Length: 408
Image 1 (cartoon, rainbow, N blue to C red):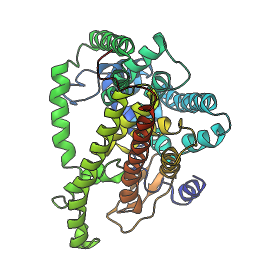
Image 2: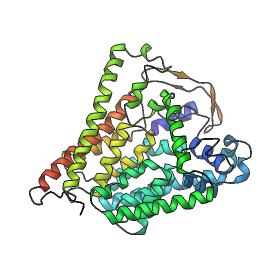
Image 3: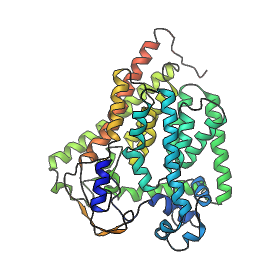
């Protein structure tokens, strides 16, 4: 982080792997807030965010700042800027409290790594609503609240901010906690219907149509996909993209990637499903957080919704005790993913633009880097380490408890 700060002081922009559009800092916040203050979020902008995002941003923004453009709002909307930093601080505080409750001895190191690590800082730079969803995620899946309305409402908020966070909530089903799953589902539907009534748009049909449109659009944005990914899946699109990858990487290497990537993804899916099946047979063998980690990690290995989604995964992994080969390996991977650095291999993009953070013209350059290849591998390794450890725990549980096949 210190090296990144020194580089910013010298160049005026945050180096790779931060967002290469240096003039669009807080893009996810203010672009969304722009449509929260005017009609057309779903039929014009084609948003895939559920209505809760627009309700929240409408409450925490100054309408008069959005009469022109999202760029103008960055310098005008002091409420939005203050809210971004306030939620970052809240995230770090709740993470500290959670880690301290899980293990006071390691809480300082893990909190520093998480709070000053790349996933959360990348989320902060983009102003992504993960900053707002993370406190709810901590309540829903962390050790601060073990049961009750706060846990159900936390799960409801996470799903309504980020629908893919339905997967960790399914840990209730694997452990046969049907009441917890039912109440979280009821709370999710209630929050959705209330926010849908407030916004007046964002029906399931609109969300499904916009999501299909987004998938088609993203398939053409290969560089954005591989820039900070949790999965190797975007690498399969490189050959047909406009990136001159063969100028930097031999064709045999590209062919090897096209062969290995599906193999890694399918094998990771299989080991995750095997561990989850074992957890179903022995519901007491694994904790809620471990099962939620397996579900979320399997999704992130399969498809990348963005590098900042590692924030949720790293929180769950860093709740693990430093005990046993699998958890230790996963925690080491988590620390490596927190490193705020990259090693460029070649330059692909050179831009002449402005930097919103420094307020001066800059000439950033970004390209293929070591992190593009290493970070998805660390996520997959994390999944394998915890899945294999889970299978060992399930096997040990068979010695003392008969497998449970039914729903009860």
